[in-house]
Image: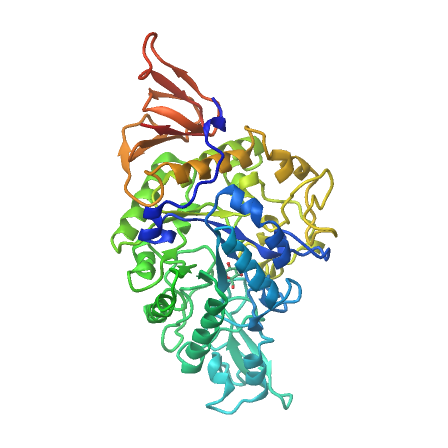
Length: 552
Ligand code: BGC
């Protein structure tokens, strides 16, 4: 049996789902804008390119798109360094393209979530330029964190904080008169100065920016570094090195401070003042699932990414623990759980799960997709995971752009490998990505992984995702709701949902178990023996690294 058992027709969103809040069950597709589709041939993806490919996304069966930042930016960190929050960077188009994209997406039944970057601006933002120019107290510098240095001549950074990308989190400026001056805080690159959220002007400005995009019609925001805006009073030393990575759960004076919740509460009120269920999604790293759940209390944001699931090993007991903890934490505040396997900051999961063994990675990624889409709540799909794209691990140094790569000792610096433009069709790069080249080189093997190469092939990853997403809309037991663990052999996880059972074998060997129902979708070919003369019962031998959906 293969996955062609599923209906291929996209069904409308179930009315119940609408009533409860669309995001509670939504599948949200992450578009990394510069790598999705290029309409003008400059080798960089753009908003018009996305609009032209919307029918593909509607046909895939996702509910919404999350677009990474496309605002005016010097691109020191792939657009997460914003110089003007109300303008589209010419690389990606113009404001009218954003408007057209939102409108066309809505026409096709897709919602649009945009990224908002409130922890820091670009160093080219007018506010930061004004701060550099004017050192008087009570002025532009108070929108950021400027401090005198330590040491006799102020030659040492104000505290021992390290940047997530490596090196000190402080840079000393040269004053307009040419003398060495104060230092400013940047948790990320020096081109990304941290804003001071104790300053009311900062809060007012972001309310206005959110309104700008809500008025344009976006359905919500993915909030970048939602755990970072407030710093511990006095900016205390940490007393050790090796502090923050992007993916981490340490307790730190610049992350997950209680004060951030007041900001999120205010934003929730703003979102609720608009019609159409606009949502806020926290990109927050918190030391525990319980701390993370605080971001999705009823009067705060709607969702938070579940990075505990993303970082979990391929191991049934570990996965079960993470699933239990995630569900318990979000249920304690009445929020839906989210599930995510990849994004633009981590090694693609096909490669994480398989290492050098591409076949193993793909097998596991197929199984993981079915597991994720069967769990209660909402799920995120990172562009290209529906094609089974692996991480590109052999990019030459000259093409790399990730600032973490150039600041070596921080975040591992491998984020370019998951950002390579995706293949659409054809035998040669750029595989239909656009009429020009592509800003990062695509591997030769990607011809076979393109959308066109996979479409219609029932054994392909693309058709597995299409079938799973179509079934997820059809089966009332999927999406938000309850689940119950079932007994299963070692290495296997089995759980039931209304009218539905999911079984996944993470072990290295085949596992035999009683047939729990009628198979509707499987990530690999299945062998089922049913006793003669009976239509149900019998034994299924679950292959290693295989996930099966059953109707019961
Ligand atoms: C984004 C990264 C970015 C960082 C700084 C992260 O959460 O996902 O891509 O480098 O924030 O804005």
